[in-house]
Amino acid sequence: MNAPQDGIVKLTSFSHGGGCGCKIAPGILADILKNSTGFPVPKALMVGIETSDDAAVYKLNDEQALIATTDFFMPIVDDPYDFGRIAATNAISDVYAMGGTPIMALALVGMPIDKLPLDVIGKIIQGGESICAEAHIPIAGGHTIDSMEPIYGLVVLGLVHPSKVKRNADAQAGDKLILGKPLGVGILSAALKKGALDPAGYAAMIENTTKLNKPGIALSNMPGVHALTDVTGFGLLGHLLEMARGAELTAKLTMAHIPLLPNVQLLAKNGCITGASGRNWAAYGHAVALSDGITPIQQALLCDPQTSGGLLVACDAASVDEVLALFAQEGFAHAAVIGEMADGPAQVEVTA
Image 1 (cartoon, one colour):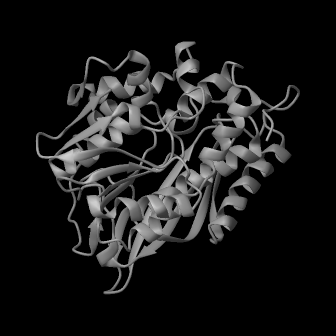
Image 2: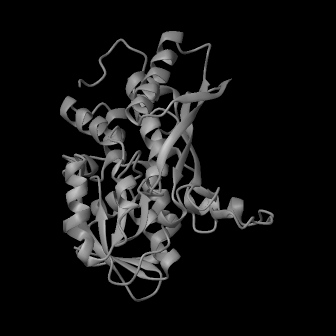
């Protein structure tokens, strides 16, 4: 995989923010939604908006629950095929993060038709199709609009047994925390925009962001796995804080145990940090306790928006080896135990 060469359309030049880094900041989002009108919740709705989980889950019968999710964003890379692959992988991940099996997708496509060549738009769609094929699901339809910035993503539907739904809110005290993918996608994407990402760094970013979180299916069958989510635009701290608040527990992280993508600390020191990282910290930093040994660069990494990030698992200590073996079997070589859940206030504590 080579970094994009001069002479092709620079997709990232069309977008003010790329990948999950263009999410509305969590603090602003909370203000937008605080006055939303409540509505009657049917008993069959097993998971809704109450814990900021990855997807909605609706019980169909005693054997099946439907998982529904959607995700879309603006380009994080210049290569159109890679952009489509990343966006599709990211969208499908929410089904895996609920412990489900995806069954079909609908494409969401918004493109500046007067600015992008049609073959470039076609390659974006083909990239998404390639990932859906890898996930063994069809793109059964979708919707397209003419927009100012390129936007691509999916609506994804999946199935799971009602008793095997893995919410983000069910962690227990004593659970170990396991992260499936290394951090640093936002930093690598910032480096790409600045022309500071070498071909090896680009290849690492693409490999990370196009790896489907398939272990989520098998994790749903493990009784020792209590909670599950995926790490995306709000960064590791943001999504872990949602887990801590849902369980009313303290999440304890050890910075030295968190896997990182190659060279991300050096790139961050050289100024390759996304604006979303700072917005994330401003939104939830008050609920995070950092030890004196945590540097500003490490803080930025903990808040770094992850596009198509890894699964975050809370499991009992007896299940750790089984979970790590599953990740290794599925090709997630960097999966690691990064901390634990403990009794205490709903916050995150990070030590060096």
